[in-house]
Length: 165
Image 1 (cartoon, rainbow, N blue to C red):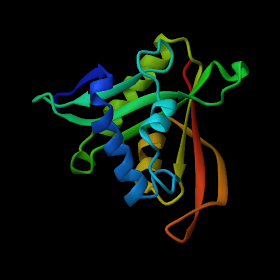
Image 2: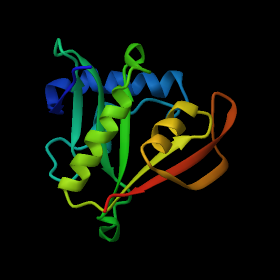
Image 3: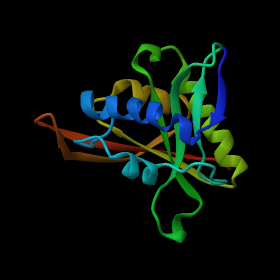
Image 4: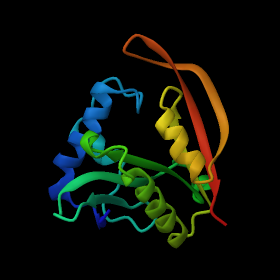
C-alpha cells in the first residue's frame, strides 16, 4: 500500500467533512446525531497546529482516502500531554490497512509533539476499532455502558489508552 500524509488544508475541508458526515449519518462510529456545520467542524480539528495536527491520507494517485487527527482530550492545560486519536477512512477504503497506517502516523506525530498519552474513544459495537487499537498495544481503560443513543439504540463508549514513553 502506498500512502502519503499531507497536513489538512482549507481546500480539503469539504471533502474531509463529507467523510466525517458519512460516519455521523450512517454509523455509530461517533455519537453525533447530526453532522456539524462547517464552522463547528473547524472547531473540532485544527489546521496547521504544532501539537494537534490534522492530516489527509492520500493514495498513490493522490486521492484523499481519509483523514486522521490528534485532538485535545480536554480543553484544560492540565491535559496538555494527552490527545485523542481520530481516524476516518472513506468506506470503500476500509479494511485495507489504512486505519492501522494512520494510527502509526498519529503516534509518530504525537511523540514528535511531546505528548505522553494517546486515547481513543470508540463505540462499543465497533469490533474493527477494538481490534485496531488492541493490536496496536492500546489498553482498554474505561467502558461506559448505555451512555449514548443513536438510531434508537443505547450504545456503550469504550476508551483505549497508550502511553507513548
